[in-house]
Length: 270
Image (cartoon, rainbow, N blue to C red; front, side, top):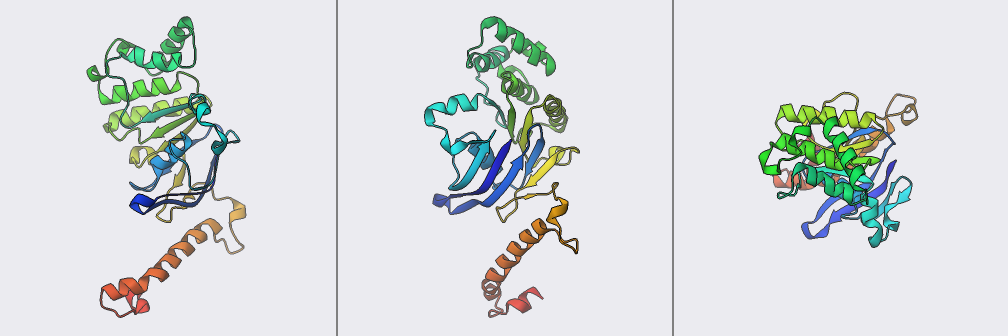
C-alpha cells in the first residue's frame, strides 16, 4: 500500500508549487493512473516514491514504512523492491537485451541458473524471446519499452511505477504495453502509472487520481457514500470548488484592473 499524507512540494528556484496538502492512497494490487497536464506533478510523485526527491512537508508510506525514515545507505535495497519504467527507456547501449535484464537480476545477488530461468520467463511473458541477443539500437521504441518492462519485473517487485511509459510509442505499441501492464497487475503487482496519454487514461478498469491546478489532487473514481451530504453534494468535489472560488475571488480584482474595469470584479465575472 502507498499512502501520501498532506504532501507539499515546491521548487523555490522556479517559484513553482507542485503539491499543496496532497493526500491519496494506492491499495495493494490496484492499477492506478495518475493524470494531469504537463507540470502538474506526475513525475515528481514518481520521484518522491523513488527517493530521488523529498516532500517539503507531509508523509509518504510504502508498505506502512515511512520513506523519510529510510537511511541513505538503505535506499538501494528499498529501490530493488520497486520496478520502474521510464519514457526514455534508459537501456545500456552496449549491452544486449538479455544483458540489460541480467544486470537487474544480478544486482539482487541471484545465481546464474536463477538468472537464466527468470529472464527466460519474463522474455516469454512479454513475447520478446527473439530479441534477447540484440542491442537497443537494433530494435524499435516499442520493443525497447517491453525490454524496460522485463527489466522492471524480473525481480518480482510488489510495486511497478511507470512514468509516461507510452510517451514515445505509437498507438499500436502503446496499446500492447497497456495490455501487458494489465497482465502484470493481474499477478498481484500494484501498478501506478503517471500519464496523460488518452490510450491509458481512457482504459476501463483503472482508478484515476487527477492532479488538478489546485495541486491537491482528486480521486475521481473513489467517492464513497460517506463523502456526500444529505442533499447529495460531494464533500471532496465541494472542497475543490471552494478552493477554485477562493482563488478567483482573490485574483479577480487584479484581473479586472488589467482589462480596465477598475476593480469591478463582479462586473468582470457577470
